Length: 68
Figure (cartoon, rainbow, N blue to C red):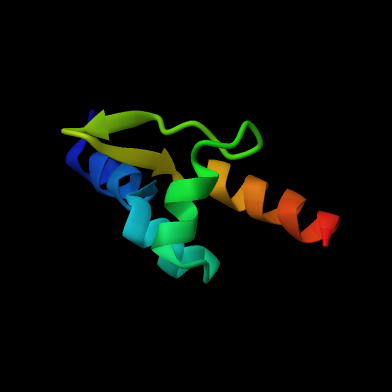
């Protein structure tokens, strides 16, 4: 993988606090949502911390807004 490609990919990875900032939802609520079947699964864990792929969160957010 080229260094430039890796940098682009890193910009697409979100931790819990990043997801909270991106969605405008408190990080404690994100911690609750991550256990729901409708919330995207993390792509990996760094230690015990989940990491999501930003496009997965964007897709979930669009679906969530349609439900309101």
